[in-house]
Amino acid sequence: MSGLDGFDVSAQMRAFAEKGVEQTRAALDSFAATACQSAAAAQSRAANAGSGVREVGELAARFADDNIAAAFDYAARLTRAKDAKEATVLHAEYVTGCMAAFADQARELGRQTAKLAERAVPQ
Image 1: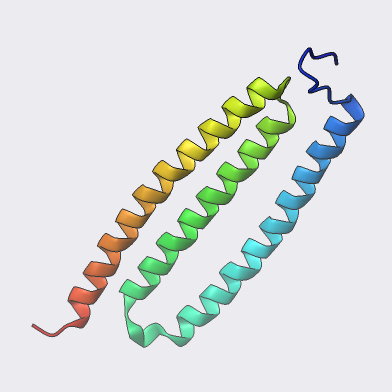
Image 2: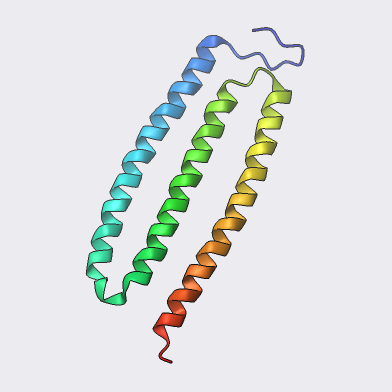
């Protein structure tokens, strides 16, 4: 591959990076499965705390899964970048998307936590 801006990446290096992304994804998938099992065990021990805690936990876990998937999508797209300009654009898109997703997730977690607190306080 020949770039005018010094961003040459050999096919071998690109394949190595893509393999690294896939291996890391597999490791994190395994970690996520173990974390879900641990969370399920903790939820069963805390069943008397109410379904609200479980719902907030499930929401947080779903957000974590979404964020991990977005990070791997970004990493995979970055390994295919043809030059520094494309890599910069991909990075800017990723950061902008993360900021928007985090803001939405924080609002939703705040709403769900407020509901949980309302249920916990006797009227």
